[in-house]
Length: 500
Figure 1 (cartoon, one colour):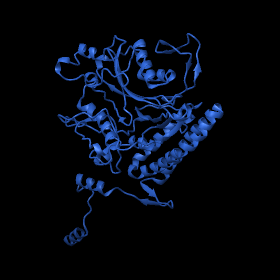
Figure 2 (cartoon, rainbow, N blue to C red; figure 1 turned 60 degrees about the vertical axis):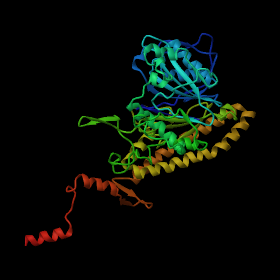
Figure 3 (cartoon, rainbow, N blue to C red; figure 1 turned 45 degrees about the horizontal axis):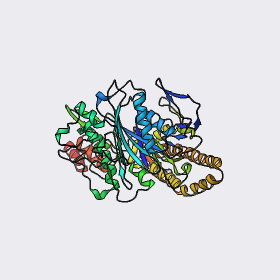
Figure 4 (cartoon, helix red, strand yellow; figure 1 turned 180 degrees about the vertical axis):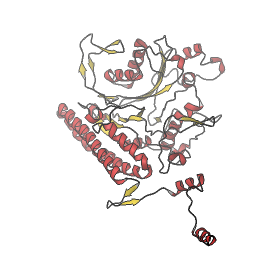
């Protein structure tokens, strides 16, 4: 399984590319580059193809002087090219690195998660300057039974130089760093890709390493990982590239890991005056700000309102590819979304996830429906989020409960009638995706009715005063003790006597 959030204020369109045959000489044009197509390309749903190959990413930026804005391909192009023509993670790595060096790479530093039914790899890649098509990169295989996390900060440090079964890299990845002065072999320190090409700073430790820490702390509480590194405390050790969780992670566990505002820690974003009266964990951008000339920064959580879409992929070697590969997809904030199952070889995407625009609200767009619910929930987060989670739990629980039966039928059809299997899985995926959007529209209507004008309707539909939490009222009084104070009864009596 790999999981991913694409954070950014834009309206996502779920991409679907059906398998296709191509004539000799047929090309795909991307920013002027004409890229030859193989004789056959595979079905792709989102970021997963029909062979259960899935790819996610995160941008780490890295050294600005290595950016090549003249390159033809951005990181998404590399991912798409790999999914169209690769069956395995190792093949995907070859396709991506070869395409970057052939046509030029125009993105900044990038970390990729690459999974097939048998292996999962993490690859980090960055360009070598504005006039160069070359890239430097390193890829490491995640050991079986372990989990890895990366979040907008390069993660691969040292790596084995003579273990091609578990680590592959560009020939000049160290030599180039030496040439640029990023690494001194005489220092006595081992070469670390992350420190050479994306040096640690208090900012990227706070924004990136903190999310890694939170995934690890929840998956393996027994490790008692310290927050010292993501707070940039002097001498603190970086978090390991991968860890062994305390128990095997089920699909629902991975959903849960993607829903996190550091609840239960001293960084809990549902606490404090900055969470408002109703414990809202979202913080509006920019992340950093100043007061009286001093700089401050909000925490950056895993769950954020800026998420455009998110996925969790399943790649399972013991099932036929069309059945084993599931692209669990959600739009908007991970905390308030619902992951829907899209099997990797479906013939069409659900329409409501493939339409819409950031510039026009529409109930036909799944993204706008989920966005509306998430934003409205922020008005009285502490109460409304319970209604959202109830529906989320019901739907995701139903999908997970149905999965064995659906896949048993699909496997039988795969043996007898593969075309009917594709139709069956397509109908199942699309129907349940559209049903989820419909349920979320109904949820929006419920929230508007139930939480209207500051009241909360009870089970009989009668509005009742809800007011504010006591702890927040205490903060109001502490901030302005006399503004809202009413005279006590004895004070009124005393004033009346004085008047006589």
